[in-house]
Amino acid sequence: KAGVTQTPRYLIKTRGQQVTLSCSPISGHRSVSWYQQTPGQGLQFLFEYFSETQRNKGNFPGRFSGRQFSNSRSEMNVSTLELGDSALYLCASSLTGMGSPLHFGNGTRLTVT
Amino acid sequence: QKEVEQNSGPLSVPEGAIASLNCTYSDRGSQSFFWYRQYSGKSPELIMSIYSNGDQEDGRFTAQLNKASQYVSLLIRDSQPSDSATYLCAVNNGGGGNKLTFGTGTQLKVEL
Image: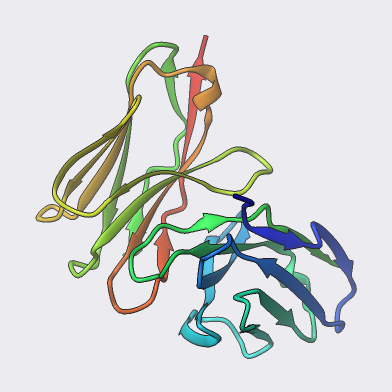
């Protein structure tokens, strides 16, 4: 079974631009979560989607948004990029959510210059 | 107080020894607990899941949960150099959905 697929793997953007990251979950997984990982803050929860609905949201500004499609694929958007948004963005899927383990993709490394 | 706390390490153990990694959490309502391994430059990989008090074993790995003490640990028996990585403890507080709170990780070094 294919794992979680994230595209692109690497992105370089300049301040003020916006970016869209994509995630395809493991087949049959309906919950998709997004995390930001930085050396200083570790893994920080961004949001979780289940059946196209945002079920949980972390403490990030409104510049960070996401959505989930009917095939469970998910996208995350960051608008008006700041230098501090440079991070590894990880998508994870789980079978149903509600305590089932997360399976992570390889991540998208975003660099903002 | 951080929600999930881990000693950042590095924890150094000789090859063949038992590595013991510890994690404490603050939310008594937490219901699901996970250990992830992350190699440098890679994404986290699920090692163990544990949901009830006691031990959960899988090969060389044993996860231990004590909800009364709000403590979860991971034991790695017969440690190998390939076990050298950062180990992340993650907790789901059961508030709905599947939001995990991660510790900052413990770096493990297995020395020859």
